[in-house]
Length: 358
Image 1 (tube, helix red, strand yellow):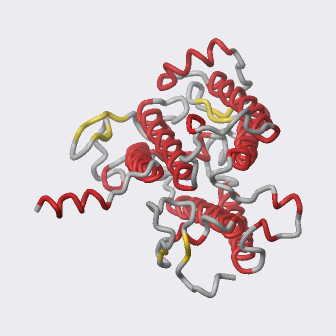
Image 2 (cartoon, one colour; image 1 turned 180 degrees about the vertical axis):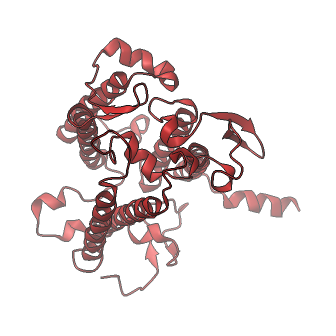
């Protein structure tokens, strides 16, 4: 249960600028979970439930309004194009009819309820801090933001989960098959684990035109992430933990900044990739490739006129690309904000300096 303080919590591992009495009101949501690993898990599980609900609900909504007489990429959809790209929704004749898509959406709604229940259990029933639990294995996932051994242990498990997800995707493409725009049909794709190719694709991935190469990259990532996860779980800090290694910098705020940098960079890369690549993002499902253009800010516009055809006159690709780019941009700003705070920069000093100058 929440502390008797109600909606004010201390934020010990965030930047306090030397003030040990910093408190935060209820709207500073992160302050409720920073030093409470049980509540931290609760928020993550609940957020996963929200994402699952949004995915399921949006899938069913798009399926209900899908018009087979209009190209899918011209209907402003996001969920259905992704499902079609991985070979879901095709009938026995190879035509996309949406068969099985409703099941996917309903399953996501069911999973969202399970995640929501798990989030509530961790919020109001289980221990607020895992260190207080009697489960020995659970105590290993306590949060010690400035302890590199604790953080590398948790990082290792995250890497393994991401590696397993890559394995699932590779095996799905190999056994079930995914959509290949080159032949206009779903086919089984075996991964090409050519390390020279994988290295070269780091520099020209925007123009990749082979699904075998795409799967090869995911297979390599699976090996790399699972191997890295095992390494991080099994190893500890070597030698003295010095400032060069992060002593005095590693904190909840610093790790938040690292996470925002990774998410922001991935979103921007995805935007550039989706804007022009038609192998991973087929024209049939996402619409025609985009043109990069500076309007109010850098962005992309449709290469064909869709006024009166697509919602708001834009293709699914246009919506997807610009959303990723904008979200990625603001995530990078959040990274800079929290990284500077973690390093000790006080943004209030900017206002104080202006006050002194005036």
